[in-house]
Image (cartoon, rainbow, N blue to C red; front, side, top):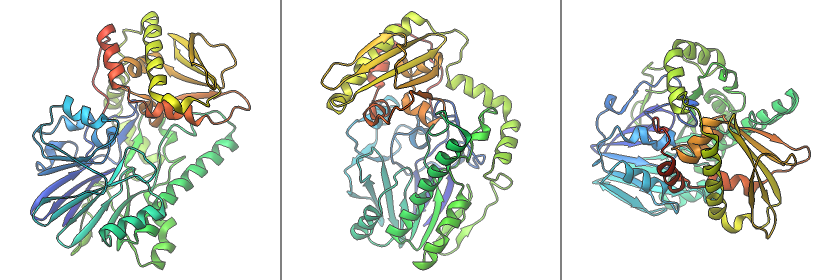
Length: 449
């Protein structure tokens, strides 16, 4: 087996005489027009690689299976993914007219070809994400993407499937927290350091549970390239080198060899890592990111405007108000009983186009009204075109959350409203947004990701 790391969570495998592509990301930016591939992608689009015999997708996030990326493949590409309750990935593939999709069950091992086996591993706490285990040529590879598991869940993988030869493990989470919330410099530093530690623990948990022969940190090859946002890179997520340093003692104790790989590098059991030098000169630090952002300034600004629907046409405040009421009602209905015990006043602000207050009370029906009352526990603030892109376009709350676009103000003393955030981030809003888009016919720039 020859493994080429494409950057982020993308792997290209030559195995058992076949080629496999896992979690590609070829279309940028994603997540509210914020994430760009960094270091610069050595394989910029699908045409820069051989056509894969098999396409394997772990979940729906646009940096793993975005519509702009998937559109670069032939619709008859043999594609495998694990079945999820929401059906969101299925709908995406159908909209792109993918005609050769095989859906697997959790833990189901599928034989793709002679001597080539694939197993999709579910998240142990119910997230709609999977890991992928590929077995071929005497090698068992673990592809972790965005699926951080508990140590016990990692041990279950070895128990069910056998020892892991090489593990690609995540080491950094992503969201607008903590930088989207207010606070003193001291509070912000404390929050960011805590989040970094949580990311590093993801890497060591994988090593501790899987006990792989070799392990590489991956799935964090991205950066905020908007010049006003560049300073946020690495303040709340570790670098790959920090992950390796953090895991060094543990890896030594259990005889796991750590791999330092850069996008474009290759690995095989016979050769180990082959440094191709395709990402040379682009380090994981703010100075290098800023240099790349300035080099690509014109392209970045153009692509951000398109992704955030900044067309210059403005947003009709009356239409947005009407659409927002429908959208929030559908979102609350979809959340169902998970909101039964929620006592909270939430605010939403579309800068330049309106605001709304939503009142949640135990046993009562949530109510939405125009304008803010002033007693909101949390208020979510977005530019109007970006909220419009969520309500009646291809974006969703995860896009602006992971893209560091969402700003949140909290009432002093307000707690953490888990049910509210799960309602937002778990809402599969495509049917609602498509219905509203058909009614209001907003201008539709390029799809996100």
